[in-house]
Structure formats: C-alpha cells, structure tokens
Image (tube, rainbow, N blue to C red; front, side, top):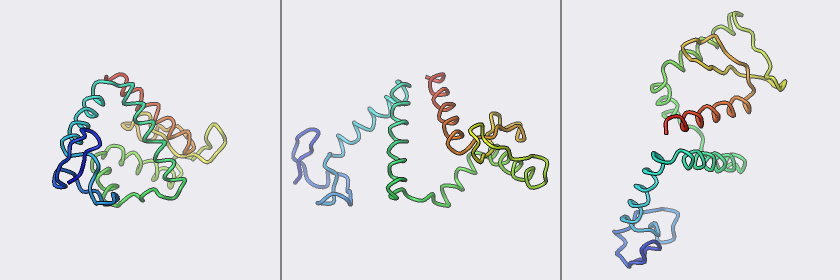
Length: 154
C-alpha cells in the first residue's frame, strides 16, 4: 500500500506507475492523478499560448543545464532518422547548401557577430537563400520564430 501525495488516498502499488528512480520503484502520484494532471497540461498547451511559450523556455533552460552538467542524453540515430522522415524539404535544403558550399557556388560567411556561421533558411523552398548565423544566433532565431508561430496559431 502507498499513499498518493496528490489525492492523499492509500492505494495498492498496482495503482501507481512504475518508476525506477523511486525508492519503492513506483511514482508517488497514483495513475488517476497522473492522468488528470496530464490531461490538464495538454489542454493548457492548446489553449494558453503564453503558458506554452513559458513552458518551452523552462524546458530549454532545463536541457541547457543538463548539457552543462554532462547529464544530457545523446541524440539517438533513430531520433535523427525520424526527424529526416518528417522534414524532407528541410533535409533537401540542407543537402543543397552543403553541396553548393562544396562546389563553390555558395561561400560561407561569418555571423554578424563575427563568429563562424551556419546557414539559416527563412524559406526552405528556396534552399540557397540563406542567412549566415553562428550557432547561438541561429538557435535564438528559431526560438523567436517558434514563439511567433505559437502566438499566431493560438
């Protein structure tokens, strides 16, 4: 028997999701409360764009901390493959830029801050029209675009 910290009810261990990092091997919140919290979070992600942006920023900060501590998980090949399958136009644009640089049709430029840059596509249907941004400014631009997209959708 275990007590759910959310609803305060005492329930059998079968009423709790397993969780290997917990002392008894089960989450401290019962399955019913976990499902209710998840449903509430999903509804909020859809209905509250400002909260969604705040949540994305919190998750980015958490990931940055994990990378800085060396505890971040490496990207798995199957994850990369799934991304390529979901984004064929983006992948073609990346190949086009890579080939154009190799062939000398496109010259890599520094970022506006002076650092080594990578190609940023404002429009993937125009693969050789790129802006040269360093990794930091490139990621900041994508964050800005994603947040703008969330605000205009919601």
